[in-house]
Length: 155
Image (cartoon, rainbow, N blue to C red; front, side, top):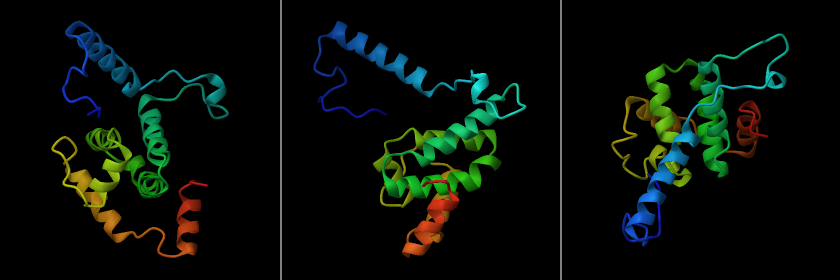
């Protein structure tokens, strides 16, 4: 769900402009979250001629987990994703993607248990991520922090 500073769903605009803005917002979000499977040949590994959509999706989720823009969340979600996303089922990938579609601060607060998860991200997978986060302290020492950062490719 998008955040806005306006007090109502019309964003303080006239009705016709509010409808146009809402339609454009929906279109842009749909395009942003759509999985693009067109990969230039130059981006493929040597000897490969194509990549299947499932592989692209998993790599995209791992990348999005590592590149949140907030180091704590990059480490937490990036490390978890590197270890677990390759083996998730299709349903679990949907659940994980719903979580990643949240704001970074919301992800951190939900995963660490500071906030109650909203119904749209409440899932068995979220419980697994929360349990992992509670038992896998990252950054308890400078050495463990450097080790986790290096092994998850977050350098």
